[in-house]
Length: 338
Ligand SMILES: [Zn+2]
Image (tube, rainbow, N blue to C red; front, side, top):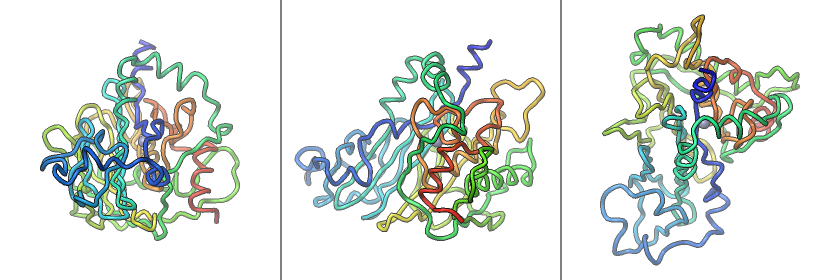
């Protein structure tokens, strides 16, 4: 039973473990103009496999803007020149979380996906996760590790909640309260480490909205749509065992410009844990982690299991509500302190 609980640890994306691409990396990598991105093919008409864009493809022959890039059961739409889009999901080890990142910088479109590490994790569920991540990790207040997407909000992050999609087993008020607390946790650097100062990030909840998050699930695949200039959180079923899915966009000036979050309404995500908790996940903890992506943080990698931004989200725990040293430092680097 104990092992089963360990297996039930949720997994988020592992994209940072595969340094295939990044804002800084794209420019220095060889651009594959000869084969896959040639003028004659432009990858045909349908979705483009992320693996085909992993080393970057020139847009001189085809702009590729608006084309869909697919990795497994997740996809994004290629942004306009200068921009980027990334998405991270949280799932269980049975169907681990995933992530996909596509940039269109300097005339090169590059995709980074975590599919290879997913396969690695899925092949050795439970045991590998426990030994690699949970076993040797320092306590949260002694673990200063962090990684960033490299983009931050230069303006106040204004977001709305699609309250009509709230699952019937919880009130919209209760759900939005947990989600709001989640953003406050990461934005304000809530910690139990005695760290002085608050990140200078700002957000504003603008209320309930009729708009849904700009995230669509179709044919068992989850997709970040084209930008729509709204930041929305809402509920909707997600493929596999995904609990949450966050899409975020940045522009040519490296500023975050939009984010959307879709939460799976299944009974696994709760506002409070039952007495004999098993395989339940705290909405506020989940939201804290996902808002961390929205604010520009990535996963720190293996061996940092006690940080909020780790790719592991523990069941029946509220620990991710409180930032560890690395989470706090990451926010400080992106936003400075008040
Ligand atoms: Zn994540």
